[in-house]
Length: 347
Image (cartoon, rainbow, N blue to C red):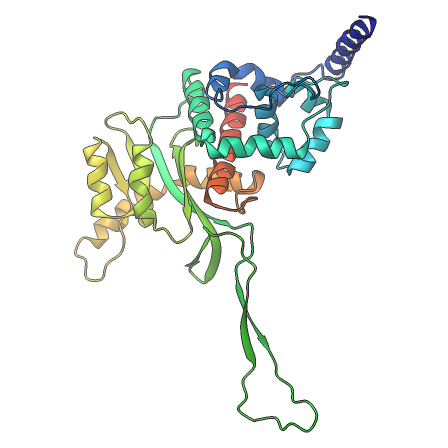
């Protein structure tokens, strides 16, 4: 009984130490106050953590694990780095609700929890719920859309072709037309990544198609595909993901230009502002060029969003192997981006 009282006293004391050293409100405090965690945790009710046993220790709550995954996105940490930061960073401890005496989730626990979210596609549910809460706070997220795509390099290296020069041994005579031995070095472990060539640059990996709000730049929806999937094929799924209001404008570049996509927007009672492609001997080319220039003046917002995601959220290369895990990686980065930008806007 005495031991229990001592532990409770130590927990209270460590909590007071953390609060004393972190008096000023930080970004993490603003996020914690902004979000209503209950609806998010309700969506995770089917994620079963390890049961409590007489010999095993108490499992970590879903709230602690979810907050840890968000920290991983904001600070671009690996599982091992996240575990170490949870041990010695007071701001991380307070955000996750951990005390100095408590053990922290290790890298394998973090990995298993993440895989459970991926297998049930719950990262998409988390993204939708957080966007709903952002909208309820009066932040614009459905005032119109700007759509674009960005290539994401795969984590694994692709297969490559190597050559071995043949050299005669002993008294063998070297043939003049003898070619080097050719073989394929198998290095790729990513079955879903594909090659694509854009301009003079070839990329092996994936493609992220996102729509952002034309006022705030917050990410509305995201679809992840292999790199070789054309933008026009992804466009209908991207549009169907959103709850649109009649009369909203949808801006997109030439990669999404097609008669089918324009008709799709009109069916949804949306205004199609998709840039036109150039065609030789087109009598309307001058009008279309002016139309494209007018749209380009407003599409910068999606370029800004991609620039921030690449510069601060590691959006240029996935950390995982496979389409499902890459989709989780990109979606959770967008969740982190939306949350941070929203609390800054409201601060």
